[in-house]
Length: 233
Ligand code: HEM
Image (cartoon, rainbow, N blue to C red; front, side, top):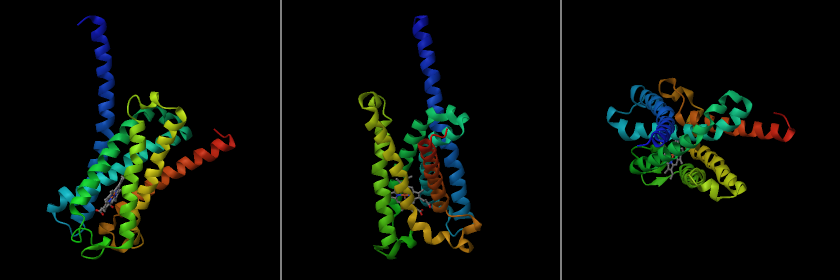
């Protein structure tokens, strides 16, 4: 290989290494932390057994990590407008969004494989009948997944160059709709938010912590939008 080709290969490898780290680093840490939290809440303090770790408990870690990665991908932009040192992380948003989408898809597959009265008693009125709240919440989850396909498509290489800036931005913004629908998807857990005495080990429900992340991103977006309209930095 001639020296020029070798140096361009080395540059590509450095770039790919950084991208791989973006896909594995923060998502990996999130998965470990959320899995630890879910195992502590449901197996150590709750009534679930070690046998429930691979599907029931890991599904919670997958769903929560997915939501946090999507929140990071959509919230980092406005956060960097408020606190510019975060600007150096902006290029990672694309990778966090893609991994978040993949984890959300894994969550859907895992959920559907155990979506029954035995695992999710709160979602059922009788053994084979969902409550109305669970029905709406699952519909919001399905719509959220569909909406998240838009920013995923926008993040594919070449799509931006092939689209008008205006409609490419529309695709990006549909991601915000996806995150908001994910917030509605968490509605099935709301009844448990007001009963802290029943929280296993005093640990708040994952639906509540996830909803806080959604509200934080929407509040950041709104703040930046309002400041932009007023001409503030
Ligand atoms: C067809 C689409 C979907 C279905 C059928 C579905 C199903 C479920 C089910 C059954 C639960 C209850 C899990 C539990 O309490 O252990 C749940 C919770 C959750 N889902 Fe989804 N979901 C869908 C889409 C999504 C999407 C797109 C996201 C985005 C990240 C998401 C994020 C979450 C989160 C954060 C929770 C709370 C986890 C917990 O409290 O343990 N879901 N979902």
